[in-house]
Length: 540
Image: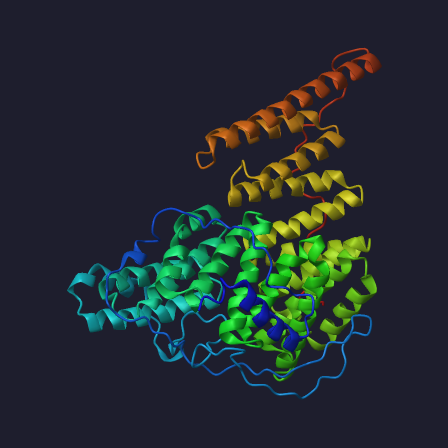
């Protein structure tokens, strides 16, 4: 029975599971937008395999995370005492798999006992791959998986990508052996590329991969759902919000059907949907309800470990997103209560240098800016970038710099802001290309900032650089590039006109054309003292 394709049955299942979770406003039976799958060639030609091996239907068994249940009170009252209700994983309402898989685990190996394989040894064996027996190839694959997962867990995306690509290469010789792993490795390669801000390459590789995986394995298979998550991440990076919401709802629906209400993968799907809805003003109340439910599960699980470890980090990230929702509605007291709670119970987690912690501290800075607590906001933002720039993902760098420019602009410090806006523009160009909407929007902000400072000559020089970048770019659609070039040319002509007007004004005042009018002092460095910079992780 095609559950996902049956709106009536979907509505029944949704009603049962949502009633169990007490989320009355979540409706999975919506009119989904038609989302076009990224079409094109096969991902590394992996979906053309003709082997006759059966796909392993059972996910690897692992010890499930503890799942104590915590009650989150109404926001105005914050958190009540945690109850001691213990639950086991349920496949609700219709079990389809014998045992659930651990959240987020694409590979489940006993890698801790495997010795580390050197890069040199791995390359030597790959060169002699055709001379290895099948058993030797399988052993090599497991050794490479151990190193690949180790690098992935450390956030070494480039290194992890290299090793997972090697796994794909080696698996070509033994496609019959656990064929699902080669598909999972491909998805991780794409995920590593996304983490490195190589969105277009990731999009090119993904293309029609999901369509073929769905046909081979079925819509509810975990690899198919993971592929949908990758597609959703790509839509998010490129700003396609409507498509993102649709995919997130579909993934959550499938997680509910196959894994049940409280499985960690389902909780992750709830969180991803809530994050997508939080960006859409019409769904903010629904996002709040989802986040409150997620925090209930995460806090009680974190409590069993003393609010440390990954569960503490997950709870902290969800609290940050819930605080963002409150701040967007002007409910600053409630967001402040959330910060105080996190600082009290998740203090150790707030000191860990990782993506969840960066999101948490950035969220605090954003909330402080909305409350016009500019000094506190700026201190956190400068501290994050000053101490952890190398540890941040490209997108985290951009959101921190973007927030800092808003603080500087709102405190009438345009000269400092324009330095950071230029940095932000080049980061957008690197991640998305010069003709992308994000890059052009930032370019507009630079133009407005320089115009407000009457730095028309500097603006002209900046526009010339932008035009050069656009002209030399070969990865954009010609129509889009031409439109951007025309727009920037218009800005440059306007800057030249303003320069002439300023020169005439200076001439009329001074009586000569050698008046003091120079905006070429290229203060490319923010004049803020960076020697004694605040560390938000250590001082939080």
